[in-house]
Image (cartoon, rainbow, N blue to C red; front, side):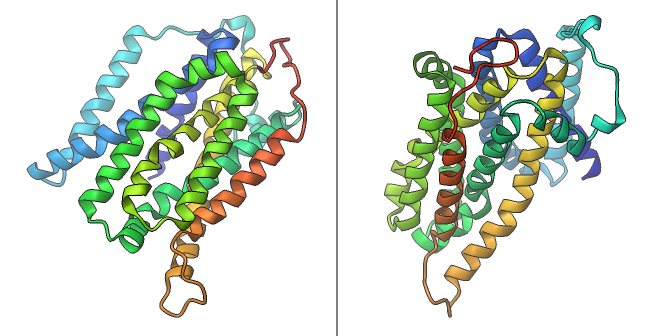
Length: 304
């Protein structure tokens, strides 16, 4: 697990690399491509693992090792250095950790608030993977196969939203309006899941939930435009750290809420309670984001 945590830095490095090679106005859409790749992996990985698992419990891990080796070889062959020597910052141990990075980034105008919005979004969003399997059984009586199919559908739609939709939406509405619209979709999805009793309607609502996937790349684009070229890696490392922290806190909280409101002796039976909590968190993030007018970035590029 420790080695896995170290290698998780790949995602932040990829985002920083994408920021380096992309014009400011295109970054949000290209961050969406990274999210789409993650969504595609969310679908294909379990599918491949399930198939390979028929050949032994170790087979999926050998396949993952082969894929990782191929990825490393491809990166070595085709990826060039993107940050010129003149734009590199001297290494500083005080900033070479999540807390140091957050302190440094928090000194930049609006970045601290945007990081908080990003974190709050992921805490609420993590309600899906945290309780979806339990919720599907308790509320809809779904089988494991149906739960897997519903998660696969969600992954496909998220990949489509972040890979194909985010660019046109931002070009038409701007990054700020895209973040606000994404929060509206998230609120609608959480509100529906709080009260729904029909599995069919839950599947119908899946595209609405997936449309909230425009939020992370749009926020990344806004923040990336406000930090200097030598701080892109620091920014995306901090974003990865905040996502990891959300993925620690949210499952602990959401599963506890689900357990309380589905217990035999509960005062209020409400399997959708975790989604209600996610709704309030998301509403708080929206208020925090929309409470101040947009600012121009440090580099003079509008966050829109």
